[in-house]
Image 1 (cartoon, rainbow, N blue to C red):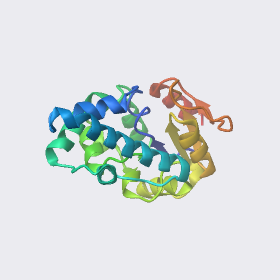
Image 2: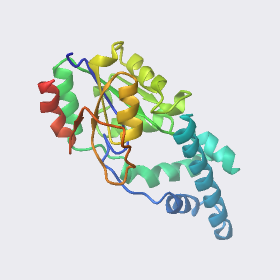
Image 3: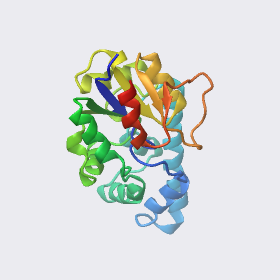
Image 4: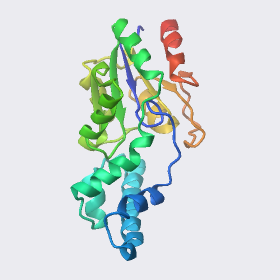
Amino acid sequence: MAVDAVIFDWGGTLTPWHTIDAAEMWASVCAPHFPAADVVALAGALHAAESQLWRLSAQAYRSATMAAVFELAGVAATADLLASYVRAWEPHTYTDPDVPDLLRHLRERGIRIGVLSNTMWPRSWHEDVFRRDGVLELIDGAVYTSEIDWTKPHPEAFRAAMTAIGVSEPSSCVFVGDRPFDDVHGAQQAGLRAVLVPNSDVPRFASAVPDAVISKLAELRPLLASW
């Protein structure tokens, strides 16, 4: 069947893969805002809360938000603290250089473009990233799991992404992601074809057999043409 839509994962797919020490990240975020004697404990509480909510996502496919992280940690999410968090993450959010040309090519072919990201971030943060990198207007619809009940690999997350871009037939959709379980297994269970962009740090899932594997996003163009 012809490809009517391509839905992309965000982190590690539309953005290059980065290995991040989350505990160190939280410490750097907290340091300017709290007494030095309190930073270790507060950063540790935020890291522990975030990790707990990601485990819930992995085990029960339930979503969470940044507000839930701060509430669970017992830390007030002030505007200044959130701004420091966003600044700390900024170097890891830049869109892959292949993306603008790829998305324009898909649009020229009449292929709908979507994003489905397992994320605790609000929509506005993601849209700020895409706007900064000049690709926001190339995306037809996006689903951030911070806004819905489920995370990938739950089928409802993929259905929500299809609805967001106005597509109803799963077999005409291709999902592109870097995670064998969340992205490949999840997409295929929902009836989509799945393309893997592998990263060595992402856990393997033996039962996930992608419909195709690409080493970089630019390789998606000839692959879709062959389909």
